[in-house]
Amino acid sequence: MTIINTPEKLGKYGKELKGALSRNIKTEILVSMGTCGIAAGTTPVLDELKKEVLEQNLQDSVRIVPVGCMGICHSEPSIEVIDMESGQGAFFGNVTTEMAKAIVAKNIRAAGVHTVAKSWYYPEEGQNAESVLQARIVLRNCGRINPESIDDYISRSGYQAVAKALTSMKPGDVIRTVVDSGLRGRGGGGFPTGRKWQFAAAQKSDEKYVICNADEGDPGAFMDRAVLEGDPHSVLEAMIIAGYAVGSHNGVIYIRAEYPLAVKRLHQAIDDAKGMGLLGKNLFGSGFDFEIELKYGAGAFVCGEETALIHSVEGKRGEPGFKPPFPAISGLWKKPTIVNNVETFANVCAIIRNGADWFKKIGTENSPGTKVFSLTGKINSVGLIEVPMGITLRDIIFKLGEGIKGGKKFKAVQTGGPSGGCITEANLDSPIDYNSLIALGSMMGSGGMIVLDEDDCMVNIAKFFLEFTLDESCGRCTPCRIGNKRLHEMLNEITIGNGTHEILAKLRKLSENIKDTALCGLGQTSPNPVLSTIKNFENEYLEHIDHKKCPAKVCVKLLSYEINDSCVGCTLCARNCPVACISGEKKQKHVIDQKKCIRCGVCYEACKFHAIDKN
Image (tube, one colour):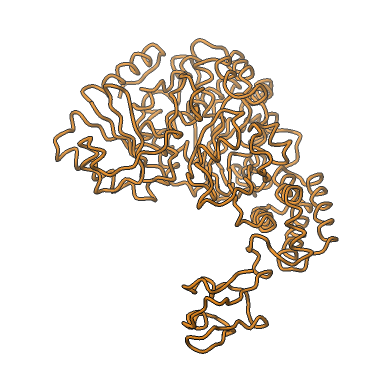
């Protein structure tokens, strides 16, 4: 394959390639082949589409493109059909193999495919985003290109940013552009990316490192995975730029081994980039060398913390270290190291191509740009979204998410995962940025957004996140190892009916102590779910404590089951009861012995006549 060494040749190659890819092609059918799409059954749909193209002899006019996640997780398997002449496209969801023939023939109506809501449409990079809810920078190529084709990436301005940086910018110019853009770390902390690069660049060292943190572990979060599966070259290109800026020639992508598809596509992207002279020695004739290797994580959540990650890469136990010194001063192998997560890197190329001023026009003054969220929970349209900073939660949940599932009432939304907090209906119109979320007692985190409805118990939600933290804590510091265990024990006492006002006071005090004394960010933020649920739903805690009732009817030990007058005596409940606490004759109303009942709910689930009340 041709080796590209100059930006002029790359630009020419990119233009020629783009023309070749679209030549004679009248229709493109993009097929979502991320992990969620494959799990939903997109592979047989892809195979059937390819088969229909051949059988209808349309291979010269129809191009089938396997792409990464489109973000339309609520309607997988999903496709996009693009008319190449007009440039117009439409998303379609819940596609089956039976629909393939009509789709290829462009008879969409006959296929019975439903159109995905317009709110999921988004503009291309650089287009006006004022009239839509989404504006994609990080996800600009996800769902648009074949992630296993470097040609597809180049055809959409791929490797133009690194060509520009290496041939027409000095390292200081690159850093200044990133600083001026206001880009903040998207991994949770929100530290200014450019400043981190400045610290590393200022260090005198024979060796420096660039690390991409792909150890995504928040419950309900899948943003980084989607980027690596759908646009791996964007991260490679950004890491080369970062290496050039700080004086590093070695890059490491630390990715959890639980992401096999992302790992596979990263390996291929690295091999393809090396094969075209875009990674390795003397890039673009600049004399700059850069190599990238993968390191696998075993799924430890704490290794998302940068010092624990570095220890893991070094082959040590994945435990956080004391700071200072910060990794930018002394990191991997005691050398200056910058650690940025996948989403942060995925912003860099667009910033270099378009400039800092362009980026700052998007979002808010203190939080420029966009943010990727995985929108999950009790929501009608689960998916991956990228929105300008400053958008309101109401727009995200009720426009992009299309409201609460089953017509239930919205209760709260958990942002920031186990390190974040819940936000209530009273704050739905608050703008989403780093500062506003902290003010509300939550945080941006990596981008998980879990929507809760009236059937969720907030005490139980706090306990759920504490359980996650207990499992994932490295155990190095006492506040996290012991303190969170005590918090979990107190929450458990409340949910089984043994809670007191004294326990509630201890919950608050111990939570504040852990925040002040834990070693790393994981421990320091672990009490946030407890504190935010107490702050916003104290009445729910008091219901558990004072009345021994769970308003959401979730906490098993506080429930009771009673048979009402709708009982027809079918005996189904009695036959399914595991402790034989239900008695009664056939065709007569049955009775539950409350002393023997273990509150398992089997009878409630088994009854076909709504004859059992859950109180």
